[in-house]
Length: 329
Image (cartoon, rainbow, N blue to C red; front, side, top):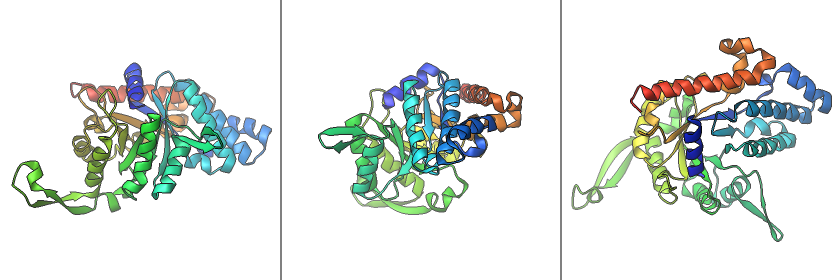
């Protein structure tokens, strides 16, 4: 699947992913009116409004982009009807030829992670049948529980030829409370060819240690284009850390949140990419799907919310392209 993602990026010239993270405040009134008239002001009505909103955004942007990233919490808040819309959104995106990254941030003890992996990436045994659950192409994974929580996802990725993005340095302001903590780690000096033996200790932030583990896990599954099925999440809001992690995780594709509304810009992203403009895919969620609420795109109005989203995608592509061109890439 990593090779398919790269193919799509090269075909569109757009190393971006649209985050389908809808809330009711993003949905225009005319969409809500239509949904509520059919389903009432209920969870079912809210889920229908989200579905109509998503479909319009997808129809307006799918030819410009390689991938989408629905955030499951935005659907779970509407209970079972919301999860039905989550699944409908995934299926519709696949019909449009898009790669789907399920932003689920799961990670637990081994048996639980195995169930998460089966439900979102793999198949579940039902009698004599194997049934797919949500069937995303990639999902995001929380590594806090260590290899026990990650390996079940890797195993399913191997079987299904799918992928994961592991949280390494997230874009939120408080990420440093844990991720920037300095750890003293030991490295076998002889392994580096410096001494006959012994251990050299160094102080490094936790995110770098996690990045090294991602690189290690990634060696298990490398695609034909040189990138692993095991990628990483690194926020655009931390470009210097991204520069370090690009060197640490040479075969890891990086999913980059934090562009746009959270403050990340094209110039912040250049070190996430390799010399071929590959190695990273940049996410924007509300900056695209709620673009019509931004003064820059107010001319579209609420009735033109999908057209505003399309223009926001075009502007994002241009911003990243100009930033990379400025580096000679």
